Amino acid sequence: MKINKKKKIINKKHILSAIKIYKSPFWMYDYKKIKEKIFQLKKFDIIRFAQKSCSNIHILKIMKKYGTKIDAVSLGEIERALKAGFKGNCNDIVYTSDIIENETLKKVIKYNIPVNIGSIDMIKKIGKKSKNHKIWLRINPRFGDGHNKKTNTGGKNSKHGIWNIKKAINLIKKYNLKLIGLHMHIGSGANYFHLKKVCNSMIKQAILINKKINFISAGGGLTIPYKIHEKEINIKNYFKIWNKSKKIIEKKLKCSIKLEIEPGRFLVAESGILISQIQSIKKVKNRIFVLVNVGFNDLIRPVLYGSYHYISILPIDNRKINYSNTINVIIGGPLCESGDIFTQKENSKIYTITLPIIKRGDYIIFHDVGAYGASMSSNYNSRPLIPEILFKDNNFIQIRRKQTIKEMLSLEI
Ligand SMILES: *Cc1c(COP(=O)(O)O)cnc(C)c1O
Image (cartoon, rainbow, N blue to C red; front, side):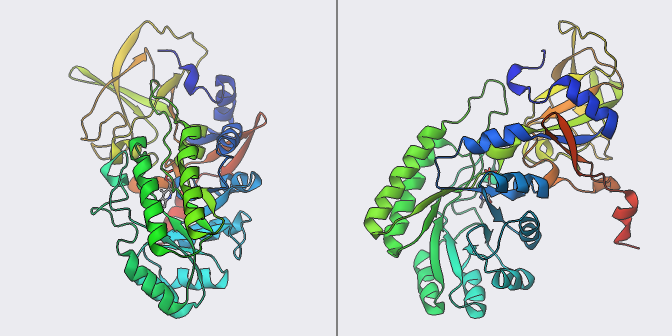
């Protein structure tokens, strides 16, 4: 099980030099990969990066540099976007949510940031405070999809989006809000079987609303091949189906419309790796636990969703790895919680993976962690946030330093 070619982004030599500087653990992103992924979506009129997937300001700056716009889902994310250079009173930033708190409301009014509305209450709240505010409607298409029930964002079990469109339209009229776009995001890791259904739903809703709009958004949810045998999604086909829908809507509403796509994972997942080091190799009855220096406070996806991440190893010394001499191991972290295991399924069942003979001190690398990796980290077990490093033109740039324990405690002192 030599590292698979498909999973190679930054070569061994570079990773080892980065370890010399930053020690493990740290996140590392490949600039080139992010750029390459952005260009794969160039056919869409607008690419809007769902920053919640990787919200580091320096990553947002890369997005900006290559013409990507930004989606913010909190006041903090609006501030990040502004810091990265996105502007308020144009179409750069859209605030998407099902609620809007007072502080956030003040900010979107001050900076004239369009709001993608997901609830009737939100329409009322914005309407009362900001006449003529530019808004989008996030529509619940009444069905959903997603790689996991936690990421399914449509249908009657989803808290997202507006169910009662007629009521929404009446309120928009009452408050004189300016409807500029319609948005549908049915889930992350959507199954393309549903695609036509989503597009048809968008067409139906647009006709029902029957107002001239400027944008429609296909939402996010584009998958990436986490497992070696998984295929990349067919972007051409995805675009074709959406573009056809756009044209139908343009004809029906007699206006010109821009087609947006709003990916998070697709743009950044494959660019990121997480470098950890083996602290202990423990035999427990007939099982072998390999414990590393990152836990689910750093990378929560396996614990939260049962997500799979490809794992490779890097020996600490220059010894030659014998890939035919293997052992089956469970990979776990340092947290004081038995669920702190990276090799587990959605039902929390632990599984083993096959690795060559490893030893304490070797590095374990988690792949495809650029999305929902660092951005979902926490301080659980009072472990500080770890650094984020950008690999660009054969150089390393520290784009987030390690949090100190003092900083962590300072909120309480
Ligand atoms: C999370 C989210 C996205 C991005 O989802 P990905 O699976 O990362 O592409 C896009 N739009 C909205 C509204 C979201 O909530």
